[in-house]
Image (cartoon, rainbow over all chains, first blue to last red; front, side, top):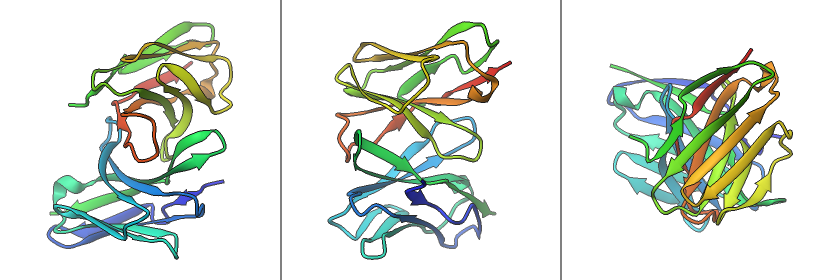
Length: 114
Length: 114
């Protein structure tokens, strides 16, 4: 049962434009959300996070928005750069049956076209 | 460069072999994790060690045996694996294993079972 979903497996954006990556979750007990970026042949790299008590967190070109009522979060990258081309995973954390757990989405492959 | 180091980068083993994957971090993190990732899938949690004690085992078959010799090291001992165990094995650490403590991943070991 996939508790965190990224419904767009891929996204292409022109350099300089905004990239918007979306993520939906089903478990209302999740209280912390993260985005990871993964290049081929490397492990995921932590990008940005947001607590459930906030609805927005910004770090440079990256902004994460959280809509708790809709159980939806999004990552905005602006302006997009070719180096941003990677797979982006959203993740949610909370107390699961066996303790704190990270639940990962299925990933969105972003391609930024020069 | 990642602050979580995994060795080897690649491993090919037969179904009767015994091998070990190694992971090391020197960030003073007290929680360490093993994840398994298949192509085009999100990372799947296998084990969590918190303060050098196994805190989560996600119903992983006994042919995978984790070991945490100290707070900086995490091993995964492999024995009698099956071809379907071929995957990218990711090690991660976090500061204290709480839900809002981001994971820091290594670059993984690409395992092929023949």
